[in-house]
Structures are given as structure tokens and as C-alpha cells.
Amino acid sequence: MTFSEVRENVFVAADTIRSHKMRSSLTMLGIVIGVTSVISVASIIDGLNKFVQDRVDALGSRTFFITRFPAGQDPSRLALKYRTRKYIDYGDAAYLRDACPGLDAATTFGTRAFFFGQQNSISYGGARIERLFLRGAQPEYLQAIPLFAVEQGRFISKYDEQHARPVVVIGMDIADTLFPRIDPVGKMVRLNGGLYEVVGVFQHDSGMFVGASVDQFAVIPLSDFHKNNPDVRELAIAFTVARGSSVEDTKEAVREAMRKRRRVTSGRPDDFEIISPDFLSSLWNQLTGALAILTGVISSIGLLVGGIGVMNIMLISVTERTSEIGVRKAIGARRSDIRVQFLMEAVFLTAAGGFIGIALGAAIAFTVRHLLPSVPAHVSYLWVGLGVAMSVGVGIFFGYYPANRAANLDPIVCLRYE
Image 1 (cartoon, rainbow, N blue to C red):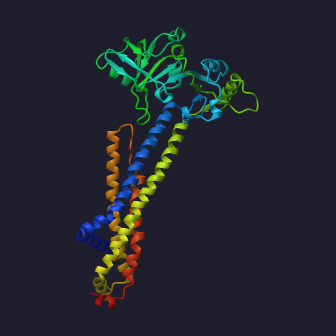
Image 2: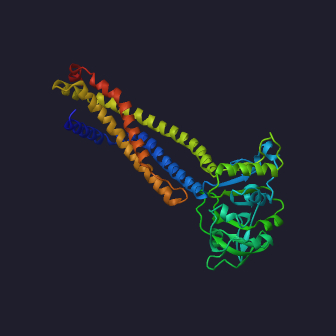
Image 3: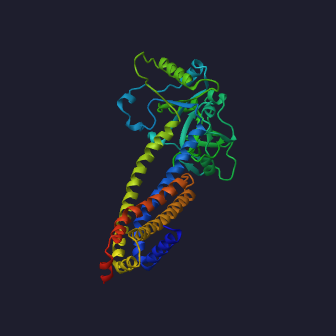
């Protein structure tokens, strides 16, 4: 087929759609819904995947955590084999620093938060915040977890830790709420009923999507945390492998040291978990996998409905234009010419719906990105190309039968049709 014939078929298809605007719009609706759902959800998932990976990269590949139970477990619904494990001890990190020369840093920390069934409050003057995360940490905490960086003032010192001093480093959201127009460093706040001196403010942190971030944290010396929160027993350890040391060898040394410390006999499994930051991306991939399947089902239904609509409108078009088909065949049109003409009309119809769906999906992703900066939706060329391919494929698949039916009509019968 020559270029002029292709162009002529495209113009004929466009004229057909324009002459039946309402019918064509309703037919394209299923294609639009299917492609829009694919583009918008895929854009959001792609953006979030990049965001999660950036957060994991920020922690570094040499940072690990030791906990009593695996990551992703609900602390209130632990299996029996995890509930019977020993708790992490306040002195475990100091023991690891002495026992494992390959470590760059090791620190124990504890958290008091609402998801453990515990409540916190911090106030200054007439301002009060109740939904915050209280964490007890050691001076090595910043070295082990670089996401916590101090912007104003300082972090907890060894002197603060040794003397269980009532000092606190607060997140940016807490500082903005309690001290909207004054410098918070040096001020006294009431934290869970006790007076604490604010010695520092953390840098702003975007957090994980709409979840907790450093901005909602208040960090106090671990020794003071232990003294004032005897009910909190669920601790964790963060450690980093020193540059020049083998990551795997150091992890194994830490594992052996913890087994010795916790008196785990030979042949018994570990009663603790060593977790890599990669668990965040793995957990997220599991969540988005289910979301992608759901999106695929929704988009498939939309495309199926749109495809059936395309087949229906093309069959009606073949019936309405039976005389036209007879005239074209009488003046020399081949079956292939008729088939391509109607197939081009079906593809033109679905492609138009696909481009509208891509535009709407991109608009949704753009809106989400600006209304919720913590959800960095990103439209990739891969999904745009896939949206075009899906819409064109639907047009070819569902348009072939009507086009073939038109091509096989007897020209004599067509010319006598009224």
C-alpha cells in the first residue's frame, strides 16, 4: 500500500468518526478508562519505586539493623516463636563494638510510639503535640543512620548519655509547631511530663510517602529513655561496616557475637534478625505487585469493553456502508483494500482513545505529584509506548473481524443493497 493510500484511509477514518461524534466518543470511553488507569497507576508506582530506592541508597549498603523479629511484622501480632525470643539488651551495641573490629559504628536505640500502643506528648507554652515518635539513642546514632542529620544546634553527646541528661533533639515539624517564630535551641519543653532542654533540630526529611519522617521525631539520650520508660523493652541495633572491611565477613562476625552474647547454643537457629535496608524496597515491591495486578484487571476490563464497542460500531459501519463497498469493488478495489480501510478506521478510533487516556493519565500523575510531594509520580516513556501499543492492538484485534467481513462481501449483493 502506497503512502497516498494510507493517508486517504486515515482521512476517511477521521471523517467517519466526525460524522458520528457521540457514537465514537462512547466507543472510545472503554479504551480511555483502560489506558488512563494503566498510565496513572504505573506512573505513581514508578515514582514511588525510585523514591524508595533513593531512601535505601541514602542509608547505604553497609548499614544493617538487628531486631528481635523480622521486618514488616506487626509487633502486636507476633508469632509464638518470635514472642519467646529474648529482647535486645541496652548493652548489646557496646558489646558488638568491642567484639567486632570490622564495625564502623554500632548503636542501640529504642522507640516509644503509637503503633506500639504508647502515647507521647511535647509542649511549649500553649502549643502541644501528641502524635510524635520518641526515640532514645546514643551519640553514634547519627553515624549509623545518616537520615538523621542535625541542622540547628547539636546532637546528643557522650556526656549527655553518661549522665542521662534531659536534653532532646526535635524534628522540623515539631520545631515549626512549638516555635514558629523563635529559635528553639536552648528552650525548655515538657516531654511526657518531664522538662527537657532542646539542644538541636533535625534537617527536614520527606519521610516514607505519607508515613513517619524525621520531622516527627524527638530523640533523647538512651540512658534517660531507659530510666523514664521502663515499660519499653523492644529495642533495636543499627551498625555500619567500616570501609575496607568485608561486608559479609563482618555480618557473620556480628551474628556470631550476638549468638554468643545471647547464649544461643550450636545447632539452634538465631533468635534475632539481621536486616538490610533492602527490605524496604522488597516490602514495597510486594505491595506494588498486588496493586499492579489490580490495575491490570481494571484496565483489561476497560480495554475489553472498549474493544467490544469498537467491534460493534465497525459492524454497524459495514452494514451502513454496504453500497459504498459495492461501488468501490465495482471500480476495482481489492479485498485487501477494503479490509485495510475498515481496519484503519478501527485502529484510528482506538488510537484516539489511547492518546486521550495517556493525556489523562499524565494529568493525574502531574496532579498527584504537586498535591502530594511525598508521592513522586513519574510518567515514563515505556508506559506511554505501552499505552499506545495496547490501544492500537485492541483496534487491530477487535477490528479485524468487521474489516474481513466487509472485504468478503459480494459486490453484486452490495450494489443491490438498500
